[in-house]
Length: 74
Image (cartoon, rainbow, N blue to C red; front, side, top):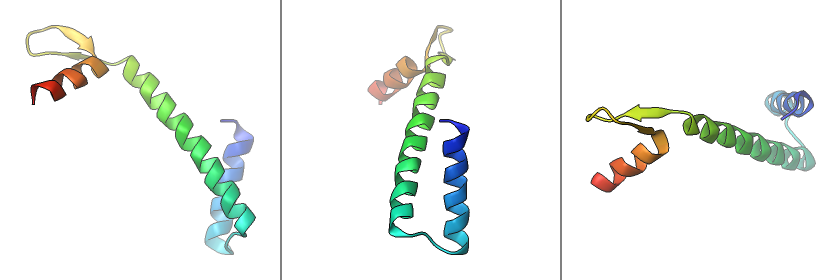
């Protein structure tokens, strides 16, 4: 997300607190939040791809694999 979009999100959030938003601005804010959250989720998933977990037996496995493995045990 570029700086221009972040600035617009912040501008709309500030305006919402002070004077309220028009219907068009509410729709714009909702769409910008949707894009922003999508990018955050994508970044978080990419971060998890680079995280490893050491199991009790000493083996090191990717986090997502360890998490799935843990769910299957329960």
